[in-house]
Structure formats: structure tokens, C-alpha cells
Image 1 (spheres, rainbow, N blue to C red):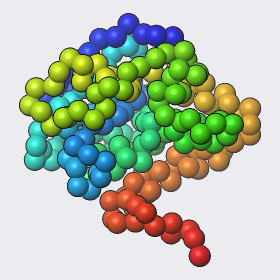
Image 2: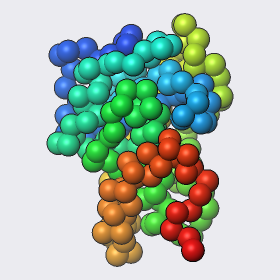
Image 3: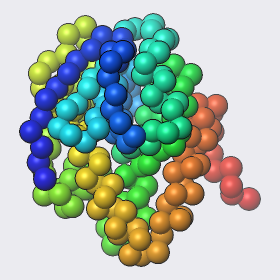
Image 4: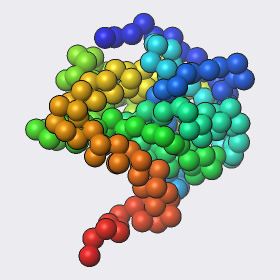
Length: 207
């Protein structure tokens, strides 16, 4: 179901009054694809109600108390798509390791073994019949002022993760892989820390 969208842009942190509930979709935009090197520029969040809350992170910023409190709150489930990267980017910037987490890319790879199409755009098209644009994916997220197109793109990465989780959970249960998926989600923060520590390309489980 396509939602009526409202965007809320904040500087440096979430506002004190904002409560996004017990399940929050989270995504990040950075200056590149190396979370240990490329700075965090934007964090997007949504409770799945059509509102996207975007926090623009300043260069050199290391504190965001309200955002960090939510990320570290073990009573709040954080939904990601390719959470391995986003968890690492947030941990590297704010020393806030997200737990508990759910990753729609991992869920898709475990449930949808009939395809190799596990990108967010693919999942939204195939499971929810929603088409999103990826034209702004590689734009300059470190700009002082972000364009409307950038903000709309960033919002689209979190607005539908709740609906995707529902669809993927049904498929995981049907295929008897729910427990296996949960074990992967539980390990994901550690996988992100391994990436930051230098083991991003090394399979530590191999002989």
C-alpha cells in the first residue's frame, strides 16, 4: 500500500518530543560505501505511518543524544535494508550499536531463494507493487542544503520497511526459516563491528 508521505527534516538530532514507537525503520546516507572512511550525512527514520523523519548530520558531529537513545533502546526494534552497512555507519559516528535489529535484505535472501533480486527497489515492486526512484542514490549527501529530490529519495528507503517485514515474515514462516533469520539478525551488529575492525572481506568462519 502506497502511503501519503510527510517529510520532517531536522538538524543534528531528533527533537526531544518525538516518539516513533516500538518498531522504527532506519536508513543512512553517507559520502561513500566504506563506513569506516566515509562520513555519515543523513539518518532517516519512520514508524511506518507515512511520516519520514530525516536527521542531517554535520561534518565532524559525534553526538546526537535523542537519536542514540532510540538506536540503543533494546525495547525498540530497528528495521533496516542491508543493515550491515547502516549499523556500522551509525556505530562509527556515534558509538551507538543498534540492537535489536531486522534486515529485509537478509530476510529476502533466506525466504526468496528463487531469485537473486534482493534490492529494495525490487522488493517493493514485487511484494508491494510500489515503484521508487533510485536516481539520487549516488548524489552528494554531504551538501549543506539537500534538494527536495534527495529528501524524497531518502524517505522512500524507510517508509515501506514495516510492510515489507510483514510480507517477508509470512514467507519465512511458510518456509520454516524464521528462527534461522532471527539468528542472523541477532548476529548483524557483530558483523557490522567486524567490518569496522577490518574484517569486511575476510570469512572468519572458513578453514
